[in-house]
Amino acid sequence: MVNTQEKEIINKTVHNTFEDIKHFDEYGNEYWYARELQKALDYKEWRNFKKVIDKAIISANNSIADGNDWLVEVNKPIKTGKGKEEFIKDYKLSRYVCYLIVQNADPNKEVVALGQTYFAVQTRKQEITEQEYESLSEDEKRFFQRKLTRQGNYTLQKVASSAGVKNMAEFHNAGYKGLYNGETADDIFKRKNLRYREDILDNMNEDELVANLFRINQTKQRLIKDNVQGENNAKAVHYEVGKKVRKAIQDIGGMLPEDMPTPEKSLKELEKD
Image (cartoon, rainbow, N blue to C red; front, side, top):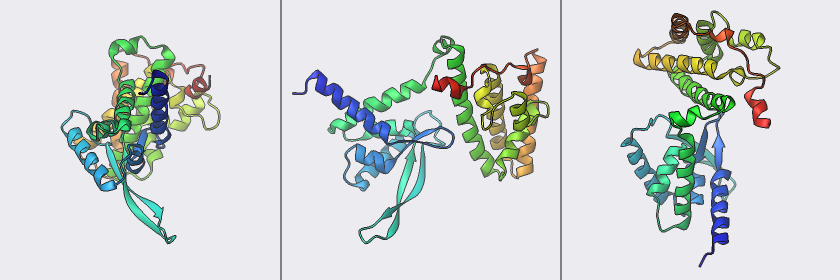
């Protein structure tokens, strides 16, 4: 029989196992590879684990969650016994679809039960109520809004790429120009007097991040709704949306983004602290 101390050690080991195979893309979004999750959940054969993935996708499709980034198919190179390189199919999995996978996995496996707890906890950590948000400190609100803008930009770039945008820097600058009365990202960087390679979004207060998040989400919706095609057309939409967000702020008598104070510490500095 497993005692309490041994159970805590097992829980910690399993927790570390799922943490160790967690990856992050260039926008800070977390994901897991299906092949690595298969091993962690003690599935010997890919074909059996693939059935679990398929069930999870059906569950996801029946949910109200946004399924755009649940699963991304990739081809991974492996070395065969003869030293040759071959490619196998793999998937990048979001936290949400991992949660559904462990819910549909073999409940007789102890690691599956522990995996269900791990992904349930991780999913809950990403949820926040209005009351909980108001209880956060100003810096914590900045971290929360920064995460949303990072995710928003990631989705916007995918939509913009599908619309034919190649030069993402110019596309993003079009939005900044509309919102900041002609300022580019570099102009904002210089006005904030930031150091080399500092991120302007890491140096915005909560309200400035919210204004940019609104610009990002509204641009994404316009590109999709109007089926915008072509780089110049997409840039024009981004500029127009940025300008309308700016006008909305002016109309309600709010503080314009360029007038908002730059926090004393960037989010990177706060992370180090």
